[in-house]
Length: 327
Image (cartoon, rainbow, N blue to C red; front, top):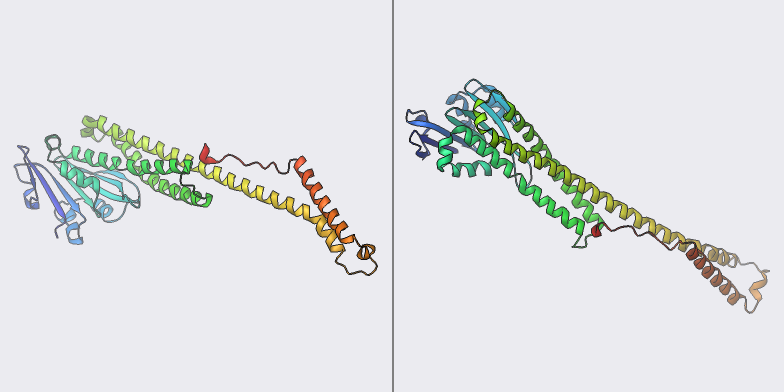
């Protein structure tokens, strides 16, 4: 199955799809877009054999690049972008070669943003704007796809704060740590993309970008907002975690105090019963008719007296704390 898609725009702004590669440089072609969509090894060799891109740029295409980047070459610029996979939130690489009359995109996975821009290229505005507009569209759509996962995380955090499902503290803490892990994944993708956009809009070498500086500034503003949302949500997870850990600690202290009160009350009773369990023959109360009932009475009086003494001194005024779900 051929995993190379081609789109060529004529000088009359007619759009043609699935054009053979040998025709993309024809005189009547104004500009073209070639998309390496999950290419095979043989198809990837066309980056060097047909397009003659720089070996270092081709190496970056074939190997995963840890951070988005921008490299300048004589006839084109090379951009590494990171989209996110919706379910795992892992970064997926999209590589772009952008010249005056061409765009070549390369990605080893199916990328939603690239597919959507591919379908929209038929619009008159995109056709007339050319390769750099396609680059803008792809970056813009990749950034737009960052928002839904963060909005979903915010909804989950609101549910955890309200705890409408009456989940246990352990279940809530586990979910909070899962959310923090997801936020860390998003942060590792979004912050480098923010830095890349900053470089794009401030680069003196990208003269063509000056016409679209406002558009790229808009993407940069979105990335700033996304970074702030991530940090805000991380702070919220920290607050929820600390609140529930504090509540759990308070409940443990309450349980320990209760057990301490019970143990303290039974200590003198245990002392008395242990004395009368020592089997001495010359213990006066052993042969007294009412000795058994007298000892039980003394034990009852001691237990009741200690209970009221503890209550008077506030031992039963346990601090319940503030339930985070009522905040």
